[in-house]
Image 1 (tube, one colour):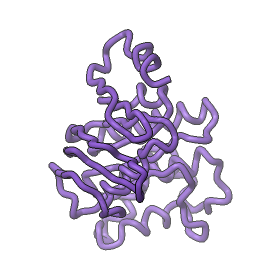
Image 2: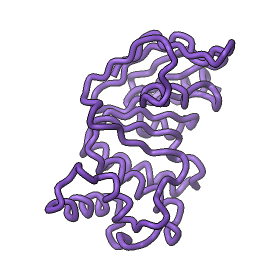
Image 3: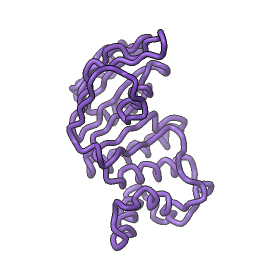
Amino acid sequence: MRVENLKKSYGERKVLDGISFEGEEGKVTVILGESGCGKSTLLGILSKNIDDYSGEIIFDRDINSGISYIFQEDTLIPWKTVYENIEYVLKDKISKDNIKEYIEKYLKMVNLLDYRDEYPQHLSGGMKRRVGIARAFAYPSDYLFMDEPFEFLDIKTKQEIIEYFKILQEKEKKTVLFITHDIESALKIGDKIIIFSSKPTKVKKIFENMSDNGLEDEIRKIFL
């Protein structure tokens, strides 16, 4: 996935001012920036929900199969069970003969198979987020866009969710764009970290060597 000289304004206000970066196939690219710096606008453009912009966007993998999403808010359908919430997005994607085994495979991977018949109101916040992650990875897409998916979780739950994400990503190798203002989460799952400046938004710095021992300190100096 490649973004070249992307610009977006709302009236006279510039939001994205010549953004360029590459997201490597099968890897996690993190967009790290302050709230209100245009990260969600970028996601809207990439997911084709915003079309009034200039610049070029090139997808290396099949975009026609759709995009998986994990959002900050709970997006489960309240009147459907855990199983049915995943089944709902797989209509016409997985054959009826295979869908039960297919869904149960992903529920096992997030340790929720025993909750397959529960409704969202009976789940904790962390469990709902695990269903969302299982659903996103079960959907047969090449791309996964995540908008602050670990927000509003306590420290222990956030660490658990991150570990489940890493297990699924290791298996599925989706091309992931992860938008966040959380340095810790960015460091834990990112293969590349792109720091955005703000007002208007530009690419401030790109980090690709995640094994650098001084990486966290360097990011904090630039970002904070």
